[in-house]
Length: 288
Image 1 (cartoon, rainbow, N blue to C red):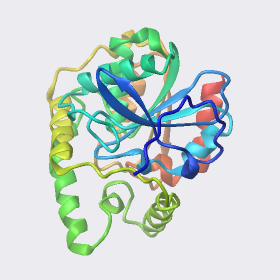
Image 2: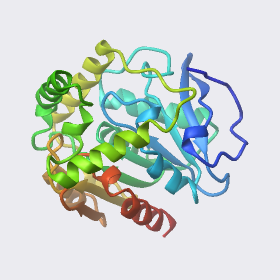
Image 3: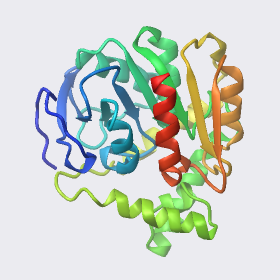
Image 4: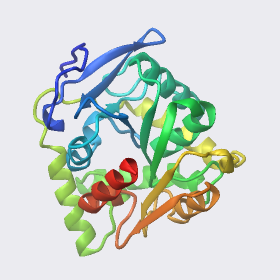
């Protein structure tokens, strides 16, 4: 993987061509990519369990970056980022805040998917001044229904994928209907569009550490989400096996003024399966 340091002043138009840069955060180099126009409030993307920079659907990144500055980032110890993988959502949230400040930003919008949505909630509760708007996708609140089962589901489907020579996201992110299977194949093909400067895969110990953080999140006492005053868009598929869809509805009900989108015949990766509709809704929400 090629990692370059830079100012990010260049206008990059496609995610597959975006240079991987680093910035120092607490003594560790944190990897990120930065594209889109340099005006307005940037959108920071916080990703899911075991993901690196290459796991973002380029249609989602490019679609939002057509109008907004988009910054994707590897968690500490994941992909091109140095340091130790954090074992709590709260520590990841503090890292995210430090990363945002290290880029010289004082106000951002956040798109958090799955684990990233948990980090986004904690970031907003712990560093309210940094966050303007939130998009929470395929995620749930602390203590949410079934979140403590993510470890069992993820490990079972990882084994299932290994035995069938498939990508685990086929099972974890998409429904097993014909439409879901077709959408999974299309998504995985899009993830391969970047052929140069690809990111490093998470280590197995790093994956287990992230699972520990999610498991603890699922068991801990609920946060008071009513104190979140930022506008929130909550999004999921109607059949999320990893973080049951009821959690997305719960989030929308507990955060004042939230908007809710549930995509039909879709799972944990609903924003990837319905990427065209999602990009349109996300841009509308962010621009209002």
